[in-house]
Amino acid sequence: MNWLWLLSYFFGGLFAANTIPHFVAGTMGHPFQSPFAKPPGKGLSSATVNVVWGFFNAAVGYLLVAHVGAFNPRATTHILAFGLGALLISLFSARHFGQFHGGNMPSRP
Image 1 (cartoon, rainbow, N blue to C red):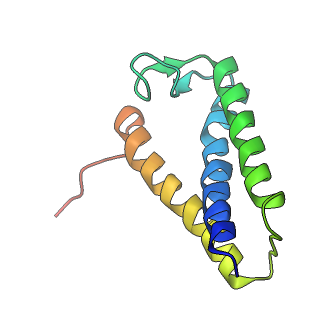
Image 2: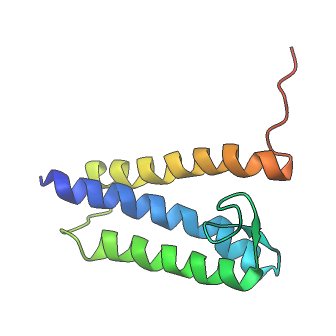
């Protein structure tokens, strides 16, 4: 087992999951935060920019998973590495984008 493969699958999962909010918002015609907005990650980018950014993330995710090592979807370590990357970026995105879209409501006692 090559640990560099697992690292690649982790980042593949991260990029693959990061595709979703950008690509979906863009294809719906909604502006959304992106690294290209001003300020980066806080301002809104156009729907077109988000579609392109989402597609780029999908392509990088694909390359990291399908062209590094020998990804096996039945191998627990491969899926765990991919899933952990996807989970971590998803949790980060929920917290980060939630502050702009009402998703971080204060908890009630």
